Image (cartoon, rainbow, N blue to C red; front, top):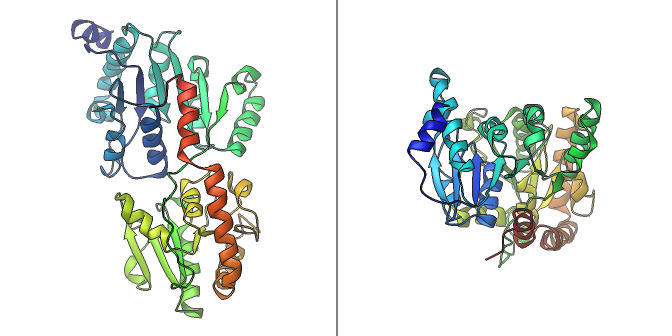
Length: 377
C-alpha cells in the first residue's frame, strides 16, 4: 500500500507499451536471449527493470541497444536485510503499470520479482513469461499461472516436461495451451572464415555451473593433448571458479567476452564445439557454433537431439550419466573428425545450411512481434 501511495503521489509521467522484468545484465546465455527479446520488440516506448545484482555489466550494452529505458533497481529489490524495500517496489511498479492510459504488455524473463507482482497487475494487461528450461522456476511459477497470459519456451522437450508436470499435479489443460515455442536464434554471419586447413580447434563455451560438468571437459582436453598435441583446445567463458587454469597451459582460456567481433572470431576458427552438460534447454552456443560451421559433440539433453543427428552434423554421447563413457567417446570422436577432414567438411556445410534455415534472427523477431502485437521496424 505504501508503494501504491508513492506511485500515486509521484507519477512516472510516461507511457510505456512494454515493461520488461529481467534478473541480470551480466554475461550469460539466458541474458543474451533476454537482450535479443528486448531488441526484437523494444524501443523508446519500453522500459526494462533489472531486479538482482549482476556480476558484471558485459551484456548491459546489448540491452541498451534495444532503445528501451533501463532501470536497475537491484539495490532495493535484492537485499534480504531490507526486504521491505522489495515489497514497496512491488507496489510502486504495479501502481505505475496499472495507471498507464494504454494497456501495456509485461514480459518476465525468469524473474522472481516479475512473478511476485503478477497478481497485483490488472487482469486486462497482457503478461508474458519466458522459460528457458525445466528448473526451479518451473515450480516457483506455479502459483502465478492464473495471472500469466502467454508462456514462451525455447525447447520442445522442455515444453513436454512442463506439460507432464502439469498433468502430474492436476493443473488444467488450458494452461498448457498457453505455451508458445519460440526457439533461440542468432544473427547469422555474413562472411564465413575458411578453416578447413587451419589447426584443428576444439571449443567449449559457457560458464562453470555444476550441470556443465567442466571436469569432463578438462579430462577430454588433457587426454587429447596427451594423444595429439596438435589439437588446440579453447574455452570461452569465465570458468575460473571451478578450473585452476595454471594446471592446463595447453588450453587457451578467453574468459568472458562481450565484443561481438571477438566472439565471432573465436567461433570462426573452431572445428568442434563440445558440451558435456547433464541438463540443458537448447543452448544458444550450439546455434552459434552451427552458424560458424562447427561440428557439435554433446550430451543428448534438452532439444540438442532434435537438432544434432549422429554422423550428419555432429555426434551425441551414448550416455548422459556415465562420465567414463562421455570422456572416452569425446576423445574418440574429436580425433576421428581431425583425421577425417572430408567428413568434418561435410558436417560443417550441413550445419551452416541448417542454422541458416532454422535459426535466423529474423524469424525470432517476427515471432516475438506477433506475440506482443507490435509491428517490426
